[in-house]
Length: 309
Image (cartoon, rainbow, N blue to C red; front, side):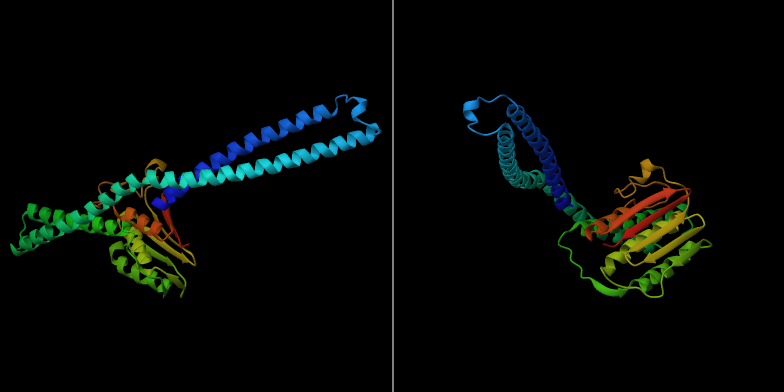
C-alpha cells in the first residue's frame, strides 16, 4: 500500500515536471526559431555576402538556421533529461521521508488492533464458557447475552484477521490447485444458509491455476457469506480463467454508499448484525496479492468481481 502511495507521488511529480519542461522548452525553441527566421529576411550588407548570389546566400542562411535549431533542440533535450533525473531522485527521497510518519502511525494502529484482539479473545472465551456452564434457560436476556458474545467473538476474529492481513511479513506460497473444485466446495458449505434461495454455479468441470489458494478461498468465503446475508432470491457464482464473479439480487446500492463498501466498519445495512469488516478484509487480501476486487450495483443486483492478475 505504501509502495503504491510513494510511486503515485513520484509519478505525479514527474508528470507535472515533464509537462512544465515540454511547454517551457517548446516556447523557447519556437521563439528562437521565429526570431532567427525574421533575421534571415533582413537586408544584409553586400560586403558580408561576397560573391554569393541571393539564392545561394539565402540557402546558406537557411542551412545555418537549421543547424543552430538542431543544436538548440539537442541542448534542450539534454537539459530536460538532466532536470528529470534530478527531480526523480529528489521526489524519491522526499516521498520516502513524507510517507514515513504515516507508515509508522499505520503500523502502530495495526499492532494495537492485533494486540487488543489477542487480549480480548481470552476473557470473551472465559465469559462464554462460564455462561454455558450455567445451563440454558428460557429467559430472553440469556439469549441476548449469548448473541452479543457471539457478535464480540466475530468482531475480535475479524480484527485479528485484518491485522494479520496488513502484516507485510505474512508469507504464503502459490499452489497449483483445481480452482473449480475449490469454488464448488465453498459453495456446498454455504448452501444450507441459502434456504429456499437459489444458488447457481457457472463453474467449469476443472480449472487448474497456480494461485494463493488460501487467500482466494478467504475472499470467496466472505463474498458468499455476504450473499447469504443480503440475497433476496438467488446468488450466482461464475468462474473463468483469471476472474471470479459473485452476483446476487437485492436492493440497489446507491453510488455514494457503494464507493464506501470496502471501508472498515462500514455497513450498508446496519441491521444485518455483521461487523462491517468482511469486505474490508477481502479487499485487503486482494490488494496484498495485487488482485482487483470491485463492486457494482444496478437494477436490483450487486456484483463482486475478483480479477486475478
